[in-house]
Length: 276
Length: 148
Image (cartoon, rainbow over all chains, first blue to last red; front, top):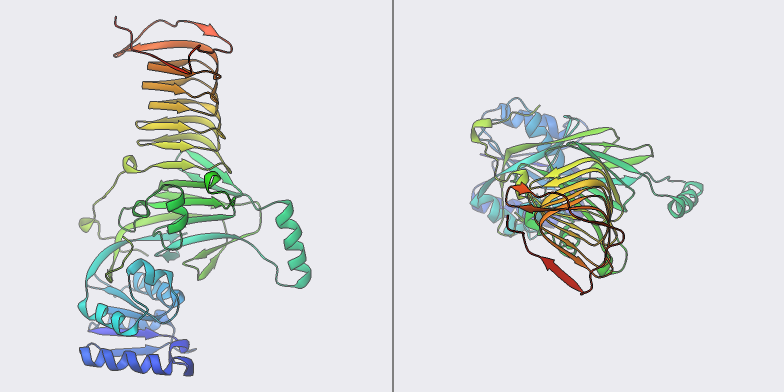
């Protein structure tokens, strides 16, 4: 049985036509079993836990963007009712890196067909401080100040000095002030940079039991691309500066953060164009 | 929080399958030990060791002992260098420390200060010459392994 979880954005006026199209297609395919709209009273965690606890639903399908997918995956992994039979799927309504990883089309009809085909793969899940799971990446960014004075200060501080990030890997530490720093479980969003550095995107696979530290400075000169690539099973991120770490471009975390990887922890429905 | 299905899992790749790149804006401190090829453009202080090959690029600054199957140096190394097979020092390469290799090639313009130990099979031979800087007359010359 399939259970669909979506937030208000998906059910909003802007998406009425698309949402109707999805429901029609899922009905045609005979896989529109049950659904829940997330509201102030119904959280993704409650909805997913309820669906899994009912014992009727094994296929939990997030309908929405990276945030919907991220929180649904976290809810599945935290639920005591999830089992080996539990499967995660995504119907993307907005641009989504997680959809890119899973190869789910942004064409609603194609995405619904992929869900009904139910081609399954087991994938690794990264975790940060054992409280947050991520399917794609942790992206480290400099903390930005919102006010106009703050923005001005940001401009000067950027010219002066970028934040330093220290990442402990096995028996060594990596110190960097690179423009882009990420811990990746999937290459989504990093394909171009990896290609320029001569690292095949296949090396950043969500099925290899590793996460990959990638740093990049855009020098503007292809011959002088400045990229680092280090694979590991455990990492620790610290910084003396104010930085923010975004899990799956969704959840904000603060250092220090211990990162690990759970090998092939989650069964997912994949489309033809998955990136692993 | 994770219900880890250990029985279903297998490690598909090991640390040995992975290539490591240390970018120019990165400084590594400690023991950088791996099993496969490494490319270094940045700074390393500590130890660098792999069963694969190491490429120390022109921008690299290594304050560490280096050990690998094949080592190519275009940057600066302060520390000993051991290549189980071949050590190649490019014209921009600078080594301040002892070197050991089965096959050695040093390009014109390269700098080397230390003792050189040619490896013959499993038995390292006694240290040979010391020079600073060492320059070869030809653009690149190769010393084949000496036979006992």
